[in-house]
Amino acid sequence: MNAPSSEVGHERLLRELAPQVLGAVIRRFRDFSAAEDAVQEALLAAAVQWPRGGVPANPRAWLIQVAARRMTDHIRQEVARRRRETEAFQESDSVAPAFEIESDLDDTLMLLFMCCHPALSAASAIALTLRAVGGLTTAEIAKAFLVPEATMAQRISRAKQSIRSSGVPFQMPGSEERAPRLRAVTHVLYLIFNEGYVASAGSQVQRLELTSEAIRLMRILQRLVPEDGEVAGLLALMLLTDARRAARTGPAEELIPLSQQDRSLWDAGEIAEGVALLTAALAKGLIGPYQLQAAISAVHSEAARPEDTDWPQILALYDLLKRTSDNPMVTLNHAIAVAMVRGPDAGLELLDQLSRDGRVAEHYRLHAVRAHLLEMSGDLDGAATHYRIAAARTSSQPEQVYLLTQAARLSKP
Amino acid sequence: MKYILLMTGTKAGVDTYRAWSERDIQAHFAFLARLNKELTESGEFVGTSPLGPPDQAKVVRAGQDGVPVTDGVFPESKEFLLGYWIVDVESPERAYEIAAKLSGAPGPAGARLSMPIEVRQIMTSRTAELP
Image 1: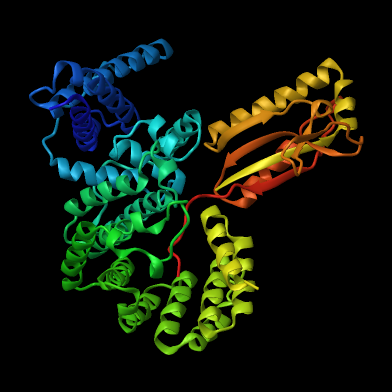
Image 2: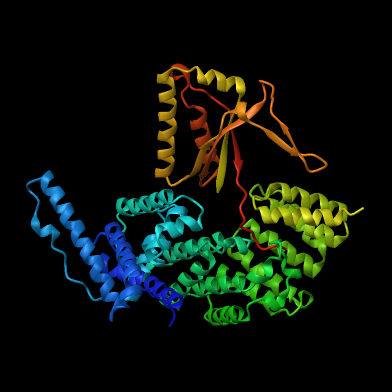
């Protein structure tokens, strides 16, 4: 094995072990914040020592031992500090209980519940999940979000403080709490995936691939709760979306819409995996919004050419999706499906209703979809106007360029 | 979402600032340093930098022959960018709140400067699926 690939192997192993080691150390010392720091130090020690000295026979035990030693040092310092502060300190407080033998799987799931606790802000939960469960360093996370390391370190430390002050215990949530807590976990992983969903490929080479990391964490979660259809649904949705990555942008990093993508560039392996996951999940019943979105994506994936797309089926799926949540973005996509099945005027009628909804009336996407449907209906001037309004309102630069290009295409003299 | 907060002023304004007392200058920069520290602690700080003085500013254009044409003498009333802050925040309202703090930095005798701070969103490279 050559050096670079063994280093990649080490990194992969370390990041797989990270949540298991952390779970074990939290169980023993009951201090999430300090345990998390200790495990980071152990991971760094391994990253330095293993490539030179070789991977120990039991890497998990090695990491737990190094982290536990750090924790003991930390506790000794705390004891000394507290002893200086108060004479009445009980020595027995510092005696750590022995390791409890519990499943590593449960540990990882409990960690996810803790890091994605609803008491945390989205930014905090994302940072903490990537570090504690993903095993990434603060520097790597900072780079992925294009902020200084000191800023990311503060987000992580504030997240830990919130966990401490809200008194979240390191244990499984009760049965009635479990479903909403699981939804909070999937939401955080969904946000991580979206954060990485950028148009440019070339300029991202130096950045951590947040989409790949979200998929990796989703795979772990899916193994932990194989019975949950929405977890399988979100993993399927991520895989089906990621499968189109290479086709989404052209050589100048320009965005290419679904209907014009080179479908031979779609990743057949990811599509097959996503479809298989989804099929198994749908068979179990209890269909939720992630499964429906994945199903819509799967219908697109099945079409060899854009004109082969089964729009009536997509429309039926959007009808179901609209019933699960009152989300105007879903209604927007629903209008496109309506236009594809019943013609652009039927879709435009729905947009007129939407434009009275304050949540979306000013949104660029409403104008982008209106432009698209106006173009379908043959109103090229109207389409160009709305492409330009949409371009002026999006905060995404690649989208702005795309929308202006559409307007220019329709305004040719 | 990331925002850039732009502090602008005129050459005349910068000349006035050059005549501040030592105490006013110290109070002003202590305020800014404290704000930067607060923003780092809240996990929102991305970057900041002051810019060189307006009297050394040049505006460069390419002429039709491609040869640079340089402008250097500007009227006293022209607005110049003096410095910027970049923050990563949860909402536009929070960006405005930080801008108001910046604008309220102390000037002579501790009075709030109330300088105009232009708030602009930094565009992302993230995208949604297109229709």
